[in-house]
Length: 186
Image (cartoon, rainbow, N blue to C red; front, side):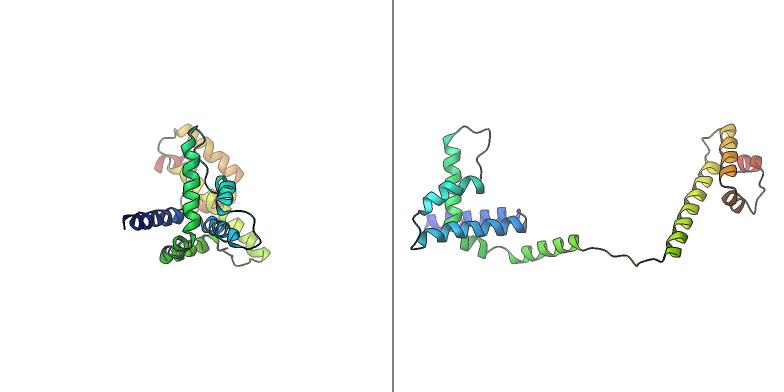
């Protein structure tokens, strides 16, 4: 009785661990374990299940690299053998709701987002608008910077006016275009 309880607990633990694996790896592991489980049952097979487990266990589960203990390899063999013997109940009884949710999350992440195609004129207009907004914001930052010294602010505003006169004029249209008024009254 207690042996079945321990096996059921072990199956539950492995199901929980399998949920941490990616769906692709989980599917690959399931197929490999089923292969190991079914191949020795074939009448043409000359290999035993234990030989298969022994040969393939390091591909499924590796002992800790720092461990020199012989028991760690024996533990890996035991775990892989248990997984092989219980592959159907373990994989068939995985929490389907969690698997479905994982698939949906993966699909959401993999979806490609397509933008509406722009004409060349729209693309140029969009670029010009973005540039104009960025430069206007830069001008506002220069004007409103309270930490900048008056001399430095004059120098930057003068340079901005020389480089981008159209943006400077448009921004300062309603107010005096005099540099001094921008520096002292803002």
